[in-house]
Length: 326
Ligand code: GDP
Image (cartoon, rainbow, N blue to C red; front, side, top):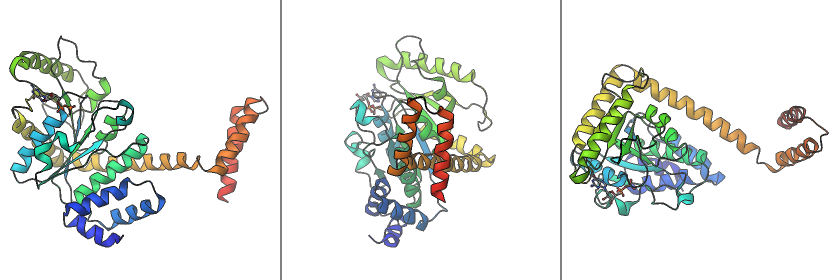
């Protein structure tokens, strides 16, 4: 594979080159990792897309929203990429995120690119692949990158750390309960979007939206938020209502953040965060090496037998690692 050619294809916005490049960054093979690294280095770094994270439990209408919202954006001449971070699909057996068959019109749009979630490993691996796929889409000249995830585990944090704005999609609630949305997720959302505000569900959507607007007002004000954010709004993805307003709100938010230095600051913080994560993940991966495991095994046995204290064993282990680094 000619990496320089592939980089040229991606930079020229060729869809096939982009798809191949994403396949390359998704590979766990050591030689592929090295090539992926060269590829990322060879790409233009001066292009920035608006990265929008989108989370919601299955059934709230993520695919419907992405399709309607995406079609609206491509209709304005924007290029839209859709990626997915899904560390759970193998376990839940649920619907595949970023599934093209669920976004039929958008997947046929020449200005859209949809990539389903890769087959699963641990969250760290999924995060790296997704982050690199986002970078590839930016280098390929996409204006908007939508990163879809489901509300499980830590996937929201992972997506928020690679997004410029984070949207939480909800369905209207039956009663007046706040649907058990975790506080941590409320705290990272820039907008809470109550979907299905149509037909019989409209009154419930209105109530849910008001409840969340109230809950958001109780959160501590974040420095990176202009007046009125984070906010709760209603849409009907099915009837394509409220989507232009969401886009207007997002642009107002992003413009304010750019003008006040937060866009840049957040991206720098994210780069530092991912560097730290990468280092931690690589160090953990080092522990899987056979020689290292053998030492760990031997020390574990001595700890189990009561011959060594856990902290003394850890000391010995670190000393052994350092001596190997020579
Ligand atoms: P996802 O699992 O979050 O991707 O949800 P889907 O987009 O597949 O939608 C789940 C169900 O909700 C489908 O039957 C959709 O037709 C329906 N749905 C999605 N958006 C709306 C909406 O705005 N209004 C109504 N009434 N139904 C919707």
